[in-house]
Length: 306
Image 1 (cartoon, rainbow, N blue to C red):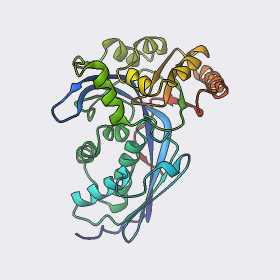
Image 2: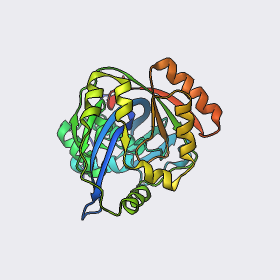
Image 3: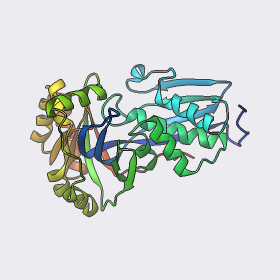
């Protein structure tokens, strides 16, 4: 393997968004252990930043809320992304990656996946490898089911494991509040509980026509009526206290509430930006969550910062 060619910059920073699943339809377990999904992703304006700097080997650091919970070894998805991209170009993964966290850790908002997508784009720019978009997306899919979407952003339907993306039109802005909980929920554990609750006989997943129409129209009321997450009963079974958080948000005026992905972050759709601020204040005062964050969607996918 060789070193990457020199580029004018000695570091590159990429901003990458969190996601909320406005629909997560989950099928029965497949022979490979995964589940087929109809997963409607919406990128939201909570971001991590990944900075890639030239180094003599692979190094990883992290700062920000809950940075102590982020692994700094080879198991980190961002580190794995750098190694995978380097191998793709027959290079050594000589890079220092710094992750500045703002997306909740282990919160069902794909923070780790976002960091992997950010690391891919940052290393590609730093190393000057100019990897075609399709190849970057293929590497993302190898790294994890949720990794391709933060690279793309906006809104998309994820099928298969969630890695096969079809962009979706969005007709306006949607305003959200995200309530974070103490501690995370293991995604594999939530899927195991889903299989237990459904007896392994969930129906085949399909996207909701009503939800796709609501996104296209930018209609928050219609979207609220169509939100769904098949993993929510499993998340609530493992963490019953989340029901109190959901109730606090709807009691404060949210149009709808749901567990984000596998949880434990709870997402609340608001009528507008002012309503979102009021809901966030009520949630913060309710004692049912650790923090309440306001964000709008859709958000752009991973992008190199000037």
